[in-house]
Length: 345
Figure 1 (cartoon, rainbow, N blue to C red):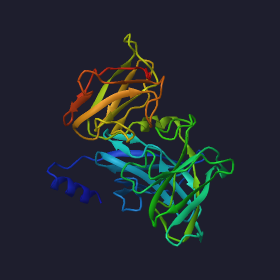
Figure 2: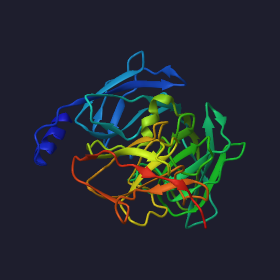
Figure 3: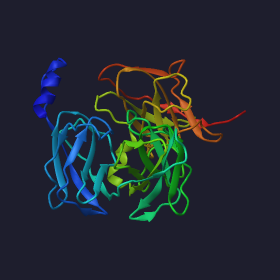
Figure 4: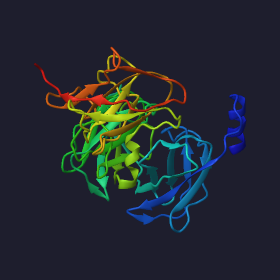
């Protein structure tokens, strides 16, 4: 497999990329899991062939993969033990010599198929679980493909689950769907998953929905841990980035704001091309970019939907249309963004 990757890189006009290392631990409920082969994929569709597969994890749950610099989604499965593991940082950017990426495992159950009273559409029903117990207040998301890393609202989004953890999607066209579930402590519908939030990826993605049938599934969640905080940034290992501070009208740094970059002047409700983790007390941010181009850059407290009255919000104002041009490999420093409360006046 590695020879094939090197050959493809040569065809693209570059020299062979040196292999760097992704390593980490596979755990189930905090305990190490031995014998799990971690696979690296080009995207979050793990039904496709992997780019590389590790040796089985050792007794401490440790695994190791050597790969060229790039972007990888990490999953592991063991059908005999009904285990499925995923990395909370998916996709993982490998730009340094060594990257640590842990995977959390969940127990899986095969879906059940029952009749559905619609000959032209199907349905998906199920329960969201944490450690085998129903989760209240979680939202389940349906996506038609994995191209956008299974982020944002997707094709359909369920209401928050009730105390029994149940959700349902009716009247679904016959096709394949990718399912995820999230419960944000802040209660938001969309946005980065932060430390302490619950999230999960369905082990049977993509799930094929057949007309006249209901797929009954279980969707286990895990809790995001502290060492995965960097996953809030839509990182792409390109070297391109925008950095600076978020400040108020008096030039003082502000904490707790996200900086976003859109490729469209009308930012609307679409997902940004890149988003930073929340700023710290010094107001500093760093946004990694996928490709060169013109970006429309701003900062706000929340993520998803339009800014609400009273929310701190602002756009980069050193150009008339709030845009910044980034060339290949360029990292722009000192890009400060001033914010103020949104007012309807």
